[in-house]
Length: 250
Ligand code: COA
Image (tube, rainbow, N blue to C red; front, side):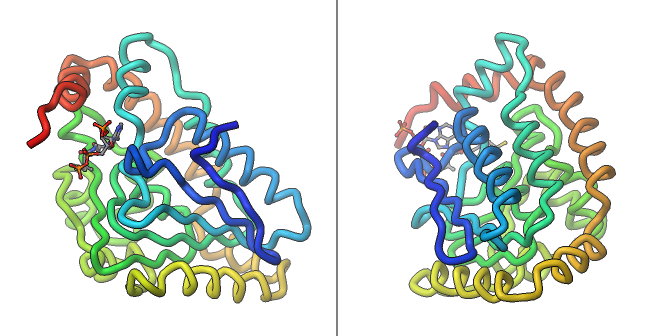
């Protein structure tokens, strides 16, 4: 278990807090594993009726840990914890609320495509620099983003790596609401509690009707993952990871 993912419970809400502030909440393999196990346990527990993802002030997550990316790229290994987490996330029956304050990069953005209600503070920044890293979209984002935003905004986000402010994300339909920094966690918990108070079976059936079939989403996760792991081993990607690791700070 890692101390970088805190899992707690408030009433019928399971709270999964990403808590690695010293690395701006970059995700390691152990963190994916902890989130995967936490979600799976929450799905099994009848007392839990809603999942809630939180970050830390200033960062939801800056995406996959670059050191881990480099390790995958050079070892030729695969990413079982990441894929297991994504499959689990895409198959959840219970509703998911999330709250973003600040940086939401890479999977720090794409996680929310699997959530039902995402709040963000005005200073939040959504960015998926996949192509700049020599990579391709992940977490079924190539399927889910265009369905929400249309092709042009999806291209700007996923292929161009353009920054989306909280206002841009709201206008594009990627988040539910903008909330102040002071209020976001309380509001997110209130929303999760409201979801948890709904008739659970009817809510789960309604959720399933509203979302794409998990099989289609999981198929895209695998299709992307195959290309993603090929790209991880490309010269373009390895050069980008090395550049990040050796960058000078101003
Ligand atoms: N993986 C590993 N470490 C990361 C990280 C990541 N994805 N994102 C941030 N960190 C680390 C930094 O290396 C730094 O560690 P250090 O203090 O030991 O050097 C610490 O977190 C603080 O980050 P820093 O880069 O100093 O903050 P910043 O405010 O100057 O810049 C970002 C913030 C997000 C612009 C910059 O950290 C960044 O570009 N991160 C990589 C994002 C990314 O491309 N993710 C992959 C998406 S697919």
